Image 1 (spheres, rainbow, N blue to C red):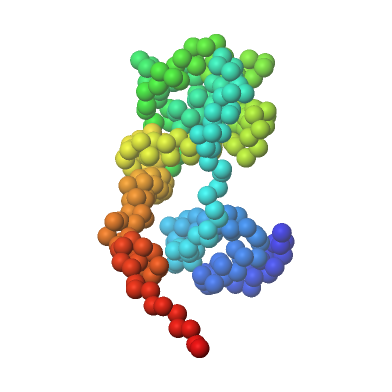
Image 2 (image 1 turned 180 degrees about the vertical axis):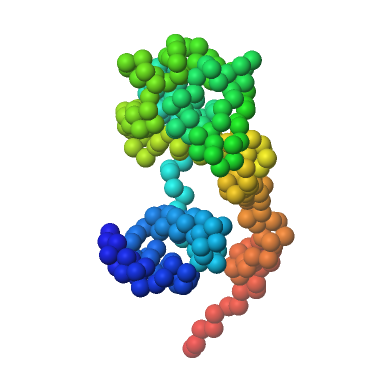
Length: 282
């Protein structure tokens, strides 16, 4: 990965008040080599200049409206087959199965799964303020505990303080929960799967089952349609393709336009040509 010395030289030659879009792009491309990391560089610079503009230190934010680089779909999204393979490996009543169901049927991120417990449930409803958006939007997620999840909570693996506890009866940290899920997935032969990928599977399944943008936003704590439309549009495309696929088949009218070989045409029409006798030369 490129070092930061080149970027430092670029920034050092340009007073911050004179920084332009091209300078931000130079810094982005110099100090990071992958699209996701380069996007983060622009994000940090934009936040810094956003503060500077508000404070009257700078006149403009040169990082605004720089198009994000495509960095792929991020975490691998589980498939239904992978979900079933994990279930086959980890039986009901185990912490591994409970983690699977909590992630799938609440849509919570890892940092929230590490703290969620009975204190967040009242009258069959889960209420929690997601850690990621606590300071940004303050949105609160409220959703019912589905019967399939409640049955697994009651199966015996849930802890007293938090639903997911370590072997020492203590809540997992964010990192230790991630590491433990990594072990559970590896035991099932699912080397590409992660907790966050279950969140993506859940959103995909919900969208394919007809969930609207607003419904996905309520479940996953999103405050804009930027994330939800990714799933609803994909689900609609699949639905539309399913309804339209039969249109690829030939219709009877189109079959009539096929070119028929002459021999086959004669055979099908039943017409016979008169046979001329061969001439024999004397």
